[in-house]
Structure formats: C-alpha cells, structure tokens
Image (cartoon, rainbow, N blue to C red):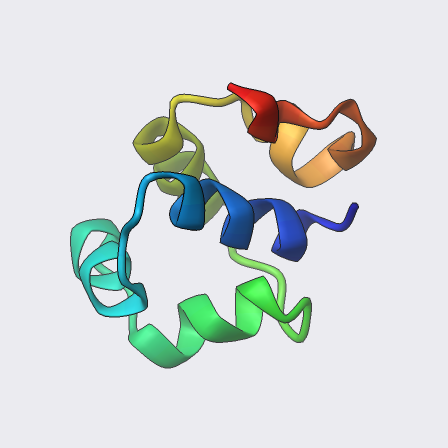
Length: 72
C-alpha cells in the first residue's frame, strides 16, 4: 500500500471529506488530492501535520507504508 492509498484510507475511515481534511490541515484541496494519488509528496512540515492529524507516526505513513497503520 502506498502512502497516498494509506492517506486516503485514513481519511475515509474517519468519514472526512477532502474539503474538510484539507481545511483542517491548512493545505489546498488539490494538494491533498495529489498526495492521495501519489502524484506529489508533501513537505516535511506538512507530513508532520498530516501524521498528527491522523494520530500516526510520520515514519509509518510516509517511510514504511507497508506497516498498514490503517487498521487503527
């Protein structure tokens, strides 16, 4: 599972819209969509915000995505 797929699944598991999640993370909707499609990699500051928002580690989401954190 890619980081983008995991990010989308985390958002989906919480029944959050793309708009709401982007707003909460203070990023554009298009940026979040590109992260979810693995078309773009977030800057380190954004990686931290995303990980904190979903209460997961940056490493498990962006560096070791095969750990399958989405089961939480």
